[in-house]
Image: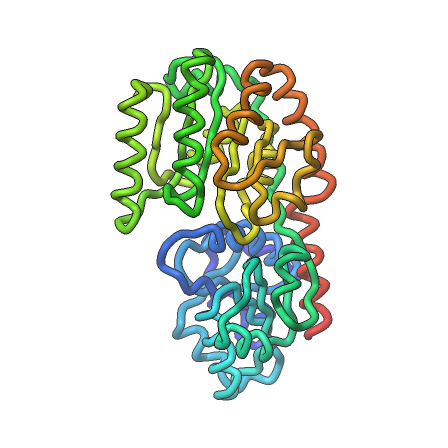
Length: 355
């Protein structure tokens, strides 16, 4: 076991000694990639590990497909931890050709799986589910390990007002909704709620951070038209996709976070927002009911319900001190239940049963 230095390559780890391969076989940056990037460096401190694919984080070695080919017919088993169908397919194929792989799959999906996914899942050596709901759809034994967040990186700012002032936006408080701008994320629900609430609360601005992809461009343009019609162009900001460090800074500027997804796997933004001390209003999607203590560490609402979102947000916008207190309780819950260290330790126990 050893810590891998940032930027180190697979050549610095013996092929026979490598213990864990972390595939990320997806070109587009996604929530799955984000969760993988956070926990992989923690695991690399416990196992000799290497990352295969784009968006490699610091703190773990990189490997290419040429490096992977060199592992054929090695004698000691290698853990292959997949998080997508294509990664399971590659793992099953490689094992059938002689790679000594132990296959692990993490599922966050809260839906019935296709036949090919079920077939692949049944060929895994271990299954992790991010919630009891996700586990219920797997049709085989799984270990429930919730996602965690790096509570040191996602920490409350020393001065939230000063952090917001750095952005140069009007107002004293910010409310955010992060994630790709599309219907599944409830971006329209957030915009409609802000068009109703911001005129009543002039000290607030709203921020949407997330990519706008080509297939959702018309949807995003419609949102911009609604914002313009309400005369709120300067108070509802859509940033587009940002580097992860900038995203963290935006989290720290928020007094309130709105999680508005219509459906979701886990919803990492829930615990990221709570970790920075933002008050949380969340639709009942993904892991919201697992993460949030309704009325204590956040407020739960029905999904796709603008009226319910407005009703939940308004008391917090009218009393920022109360919002700050809720944010503190949320931070304490994340520290107790959803830390990245706890997630990594639980995953490590699964690995140790396999090798």
